[in-house]
Structure formats: structure tokens, C-alpha cells
Image 1 (cartoon, rainbow, N blue to C red):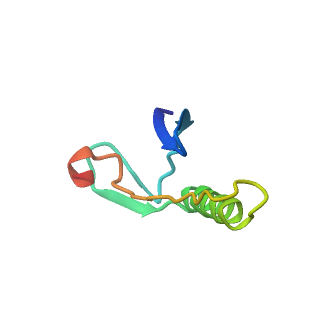
Image 2: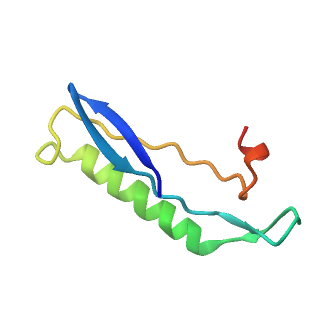
Amino acid sequence: WSDLICCCCGWHFSLNQVLARLFYRRGNDKCCEFYAFGLGYIEAITFAIDHISNDTNLLPNVTLGFDIRDYCDTPVLAM
């Protein structure tokens, strides 16, 4: 978990970033097989964010978004 600082409507608050993998890696190998458990996390996150963004009673005039990337635990691939 890492803290992100978000700015919304003049408010600053801390938000935890959830990390999930779509593929996994063994040792120094390249990315391996598809990791279905990670996909479940991503589907849950996107569902929740879409639900919150589309419900005008929860956060009126606020739209949440997400940026999902999988780099197989390799910072070089993330660049």
C-alpha cells in the first residue's frame, strides 16, 4: 500500500492505492501465466469506481477514475 495525495474540490486527502497483478513472475523469468485472482481485484475495483461515479447521491459533481497497468513486478517494464 502507498499513500496518494488527491486534490478534489479544494480538499486534500490521503487515498490508498490498491495493487493487483494480471500476470505473475518466477525469479528472474519473464512474465508467466495469467493470474486470474488479480483480474478479480481489477474487476471489483472498476465496478466499485464506476458505481460510485455514476451515483449522484454518493459523490455529487465528482467523477472518479482509474489507471490500471500491469508490469509483472518489473519497474523497467512500467516505464
